[in-house]
Amino acid sequence: MDDAIRAFMTFLELERHASHETVRNYASDLRQFQTFMTTEYPDVRALDPATVQTESIRAYLHWLDRKREKSSSMARKLASLRSFYRYLQREGVVGLNPAEVIRTPKQPKHLPRVLTKDDAAALMDFPAGQTEASLRDRALLETLYSTGARVSELVGINPEDLRLSEGLVHLRGKGRKERIVPIGDMALRAIQAYLDQRPLVDSRDLRSKRVSFPVFRNSRGGRLTTRSVARIVARYSNRLAGGSVSPHTLRHSFATHLLDEGADLRSIQEMLGHASLTTTQKYTHLATDQLLAVYDKTHPRAGRSTSVRVVKDGKP
Image (cartoon, one colour):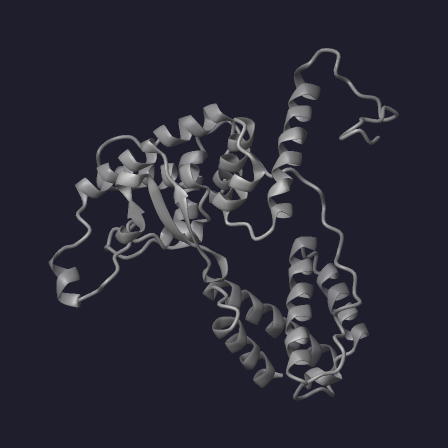
């Protein structure tokens, strides 16, 4: 199975253009399944992927459940096995996909957190002062909220990606897909203030002959990691009444606030870099659910009996 996993990782990198993080997650999931099989079935020494049966994968999911693994994590690990076996089918290594018939674990429904417009404005103002770190952090927060960029896209921004005079930024998304999105004046001014404080090119850069320089850098001049950005966002957002949020919350807030102000779904889809409009449509449901939650919480006569059926889109 080792050779099959390595071949699948190469396929993901070279043909699917998957990110390093995605490849690492797939490899971790598949290695965990391999360990489970060789531990639970001691007679299996060199696991042959062609001998894996559906019941073995079900036993693996039950084992994860007993470990109190989150259903979202179990669903991802099952998806990893499905993708792995689809690849092996394509290569003629196996005839059937043993993971295909297994139902994905039911996911709990929850509303992703969206900042209010006031909270978003307050968050942008939390990095105070003119130190290099404060200017960087404010530019970072403004860019996330202004563009709806994924955190991986944010850390990948280089100076040549910024088209300041046009109010645009070039982002590199999932699967190496690229898009150009608008960026607001507040974010542009924050970026410019940060760049004025710390020039992008110094003598060390010139000697190393590096071509691309990250816009958002750590104290040593290297590119910020996604984890570093998450820590920065959490540190400032912890001052909000609702507690800390993740960088993805700013992406949710970006889309929801655009929708609130009348932006059409197609435009939001383009800006978010969604391949399917269906993915973007969740924000219409999110906006409606948020409105209902606020109404139920604040209106004195909004109490709903469980017997009341709420009508949406003309259907009960």
